Structures are given as C-alpha cells and as structure tokens.
Length: 122
Image (cartoon, rainbow, N blue to C red; front, side, top):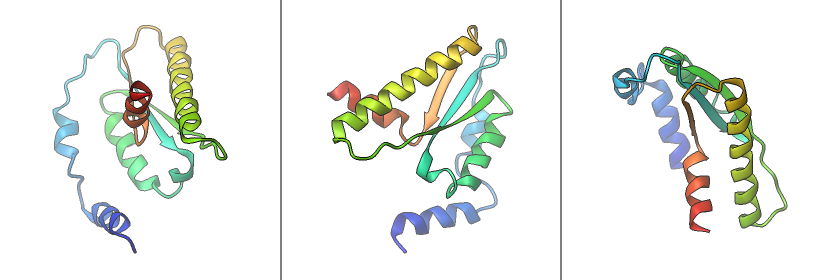
C-alpha cells in the first residue's frame, strides 16, 4: 500500500478525529443557520464514505449540510479541467444561493480551495 492510504486507514481507526476539537470550537452565527456544502470528487465518494459521514454528522450540529459530488471530466487539458471545475463550483453556489438566499454559505472539500487558487493563478 502507499503511504497516503496507510495514513488514511490509521486515521479511520482512531476513536475520535484529530480535528474534532476544532469542530467543536467553531462559533458560527445562529441566525440564519449557515449552509455547508461538502464537495466530494465523484470517484472518491464511495471509497471515503466513513470520512464523509464523519464530517456530515459533526457539521450538521452547527449548520445545514449539503453533499455534492463533483463530476470528474476526462479527456481535457489540465487548464480546461480547472475551468470546468471552477464553473461547477460557481454553478453549485448559485443553486444553493437560490434555495437559501439569506444564509451564509461555505464550501468545503478536497478540491474547492485548490481549484479556486489555480483559477486565480491562471
């Protein structure tokens, strides 16, 4: 096995998560309830179900949690893939904004920060 899967499996075996202390120290505004959208790469959705359930369970104590699988698109240049992923994030934000116009919206996920940083760099 490679190092990342070894570390990931070790983290799953722990009775509590290393970030649990951080989760419970978050003070979010109570009104209106914030929206947290977890963007999950489509190919990882099934293999990381325990981790996804952990975040969904813990974040649902302080926010409305929406799961969204990002569709992976092959046969494109790296720049085109970044642009497509960026557009997907913007589209998902607009959809959530229409459903919850007065709520704070946060996007969390494997690729959100990376895609936005790459888009800004291009």
